Length: 349
Image 1 (cartoon, rainbow, N blue to C red):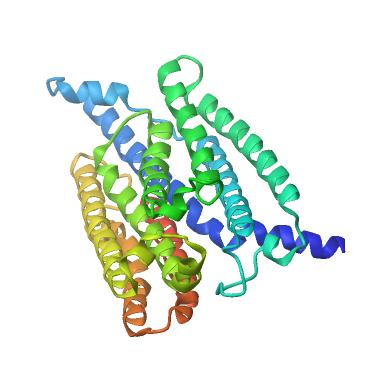
Image 2 (image 1 turned 180 degrees about the horizontal axis):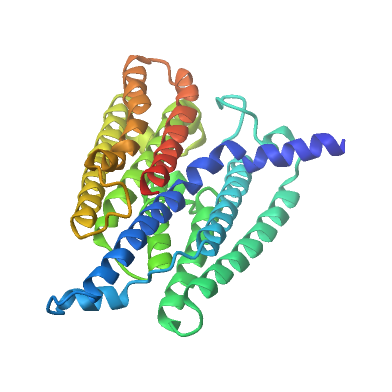
């Protein structure tokens, strides 16, 4: 019995969703490491030169040149907490509303199976929310300390908003997931909040070029949700869950799906070209401590390889006429997004 219960909790945590949830943290951390790596070396060269000190001096002085590995580790822990909380809340919300029923495609949910009661799931949600908030506070403190009060408060509010968003996706009478707003929240929290948030916490600076990798991760995350909603279109209709897919219909939802992946690719191309130029710029400014071979810097384009399986996936979606057959594609998009994040790390080293 205990073993069955444990398996039900592990199933409710939906471990297969976790790689996608941390992709934004990995991408933002990778670009933060790259910027620190190159700007710190450039700063030494610049400050020791006889060049007239201009506005670049302010940039150099403001930039944080130390990569604190504790920050991304805490961010990963916090993000995993948010995702598990979201999964518990989704299981609870859809379970009590009757959305998870015999019509649903995919693995049986914990409440649906009856192994975990609604009361037990609510208790798990509260515990997870508290632990995640503690982790978020610790992350903010390690990164910003107590000196930057307003910025710290902003990130704290952001953390509370993330907890609210994780719960309200399917829980309550006004659950936004039932009104077609899930895609918007997934894009915001998996994309800009995740990528640009961790980048700022590490570097203590804003780089608006980071909007492009954040859009890439955000759109690919929305693509996973869109696939999930295309798969569940019939059961969602019956349960009154008015996702964007239900509102648009399957044919238009497919077109939207193509747009998500293609636009994500365009943004990925931009940021890889930008990263390549930064590395070449660094080499041209007496930073020969890396390899003095321009071909080495082509590694900046490595993350684009993650889009090969994604474009193959688009052809699969186009040929698929039965929504149920889209279920295996969820894993492909999620793992391709995670691969993009891993390749961003490799290309930044």
